[in-house]
Length: 252
Image 1 (cartoon, rainbow, N blue to C red):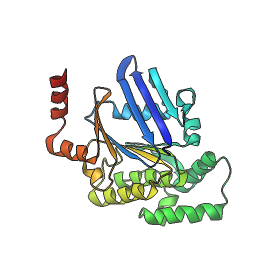
Image 2: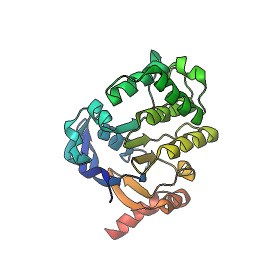
Image 3: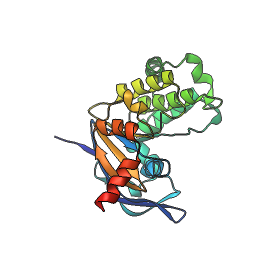
Image 4: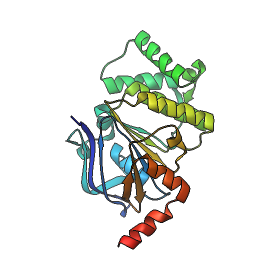
C-alpha cells in the first residue's frame, strides 16, 4: 500500500508582495526520489523554504500536507521534529559552536530526549566514515571556514543523524568538485529507503548521474510545467529548457 508523505496542492507563495509560486502541485510517496529542476528564479528555492516554514515566504493559497497534517499551521521547529529536513544551498557559519555540540543538540531536539554520549559517538563516527569526514571535523565551528564540499557533507551528516521522513535538498551539488559530488551522492543514496522520501532541487543533470530519481519535474515561472522519469533530466542536459517553454507556447 502506497504511503503518501508530502502533498502540495495549488500552492501560491509571495515574497514581499511579489507572487513567486503560482499554483504548485506535487505528491511524494515513501520510497520515492523526486528531482525538481529549472532555471534560476523559477521558484525552486522558494518552494524549499516554504516547505520548512521560513517566515519571509507567505502562503496566499493552497495546502501543504505531511501525512495528512497541515504543515502551514506549524512553525519550522515543529515541522523538523515531525520529520521534515532541509539541506541548504548556502549553509551559514555558526562561529563558536562546535560541530559535535551542534549535532548532539540537533539530535536531542529531534528525538525529544538526550542521547547517551557513547551511543551518539558511535552513530556519529559510523556516519562520518561513510561520508569521508575526518575526526578533527568535530571540534571545528559549524561551517566556519569550511570549503563547499565540507559544508555539503555536514548537511548530509545532519540528515543521516536526524533520519527525516522527508528530506529536501536545495542544490546540494552546487560548489562541489567531482569527488565531493560522488561522496555526497553516495551518502544520499545510502539514506534513501522505503520509509522516507527525497526531493532533490538542482539546476543540472550531473548530480543525477549518481542518484536516479523515479520522478523529474521542471519548474518555470512558479509552476511545475512538466514531469517525467529520469530520462527527462537527460533531455534537459542535452536540449536545455527552451524546448519545454516552446512546447507550452505551442499548446496554448
